[in-house]
Amino acid sequence: MNYFEEHQADFLDGLKTFLRIPSISTLTEHKPDIRRAAEFVRGELESAGLAAELIEGAGNPLVYAEWLGAPGKPTLLLYGHYAVQPPEPLEEWKSPPFEPEVRGEDIFARGSSDDKGQTYILMKAVEGLLRTSGRLPVNVRFLIEGEEETGGEHIESYVASKPARLQADAAVICDTEMFAPELPTICVGLRGIVYAELHVEGASHDLHSGVYGGAAPNPLQAAAEILTALKDRDGRIRIPGFYDRVVPPSAKERAAWARLPFDEREYTEKEMGARELVGEPDIPLFERLWARPTFEVHGIRGGFTGEGAKTVIPARAVVKISTRLVAGQLPKEAEEQIRAAVRTACPRGVSAEVKIVHSAAPSLVNPDNRFIQTAAEAMRQVFGKETVYIRSGGSIPIVGLFDECLGIPSVMMGFGLPDDNLHAPNEKFHLPNFYRGIQAVARYLEMLGA
Ligand code: BES
Ligand code: ZN
Image (cartoon, rainbow, N blue to C red; front, side, top):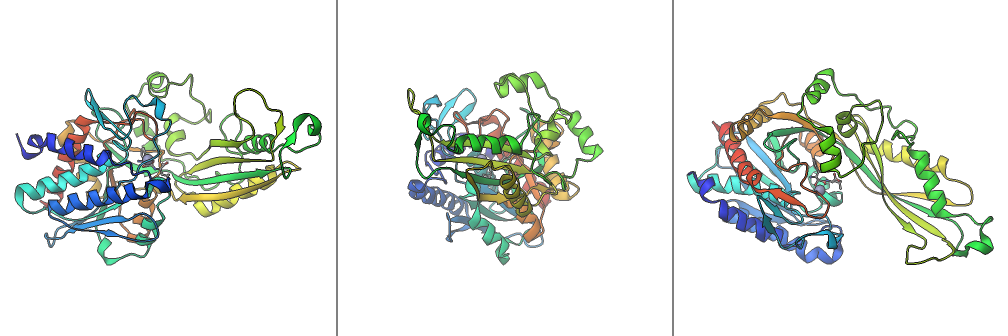
């Protein structure tokens, strides 16, 4: 047994401690927990033998740590996030979200896969190498943030200021998924995002729907009209200009996607629990998920939603929406296109205002470099299967900036699984992936340093 096999119980204990901290970044009442999670990461990296500190700024603290004792060897920037999404609805969790529970081969807790478990993989791989040989085969800098799930302004301004201490040859990110269980996967593309609120206002106060119905503007109805004007029944986005810059995947990429092992029925019925798939009818599924923009409604607030009936015409409504952007699209331009489309679609009698919450650029990484190729080989060796390359529909805002500001490629070695329930109740992480992930990252660093 090697060090990494011998210490699985310790890795699991440490992960549980990390998962018990409810570091939810959207909620201000969790600021103390955010700090505790950052401190936990800093403390672990320090006891592993790195120089580690918190970088304070406008938002949640960044954790920075470095070990630069391998002159002449490559330097890697290891990225992850310690902040998590809110756990609601709580009643749907089989065990409480911040009391990690192992059931079968999975550990259940908010953040277990996204992204505490995966961030911990990077931390434990480096720790293991330092404990066994007293040194690392390459130089590493950790940058672990607490705002990824909410827009990540602090890290963005930090990376954009290009501090010398972020100088690296490549970034390594464990925050994506494997295409299927046992199938080592590298992600080479992510969608960007524009997240916004749509504020629709009618009369100055709520009105009796019998007395005023027929004359009064209804902001909820107006919101529905605006939403259906922005995306049609075939899932095609009706925001003028929205597809103009979309770059279709190459024939080679399309062909590779078509070869992925995939059962559409299982995906639909088991993984999603849905009746059928929707979306642009003439576009293949992986292209819809990875290379086409989306328009989604996340929540609608307004009017009467309590028990029984109340005959009211509400004065206002708020709709949370987002669009995912793909390679070629520009967040600032997309924001303007959304504003213009809402102006055009807004029916008379109401006002509709778009408030942008956050946005991030899409990213596409060219895999023809030794950092990605070596990662694919390290994963192949540990998992015993050829590594596949996919894109993902999710967003990791910092990836675009690593490219743009630091000029480095991101190596996205993900160890999550498609059924990990990210952002949903009963999030889990498959423990064999946790342990193999640690070994794969350690192997990767050894291969890069050889
Ligand atoms: N880890 C996810 C992104 C992800 C999920 C990538 C699955 C690949 C596969 C990340 O933590 C996330 O959820 N990001 C947010 C970012 C947004 C709030 C700016 C997302 O995609 O919604
Ligand atoms: Zn997430």
